[in-house]
Length: 157
Image (tube, rainbow, N blue to C red; front, side, top):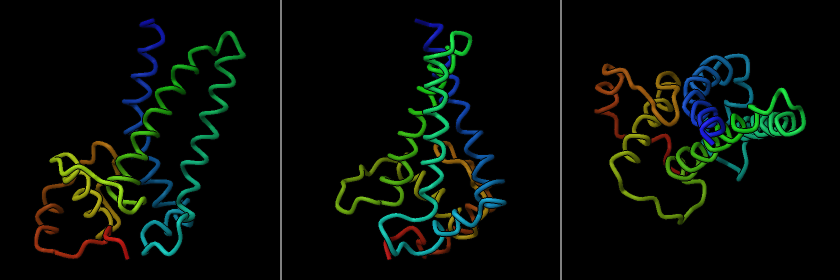
């Protein structure tokens, strides 16, 4: 049991730095073409940026398939479970709580939700830090700079 749970937990935890690096160097780098849609006012239900979770899900499906069919790669199954749980957390936090992609869905007024929202608002103000999703680290100078700005680039258009 622990041999299965530990890789899943590790994969979940390690996905935050992986997501940070992917967001910073892929989404705001070579893959900015898809991600650019996310930094504009939403005009459609789906945006090009939604292809990123689809690609990650496809990679995870391959990991599940390999983990369940190749004896020496069985550790990939719990790793894929951890990655899937991170993806679900990302969906709930980023798409549902922060960007409110389902209008009318109640979002609890909790300190952590306000922290996620403010951190992501700062990212959308300037397109830089923070790049993290579930544990964003906002440099103090950016938090202070954003304090006097009322504009919310995350508000529905």
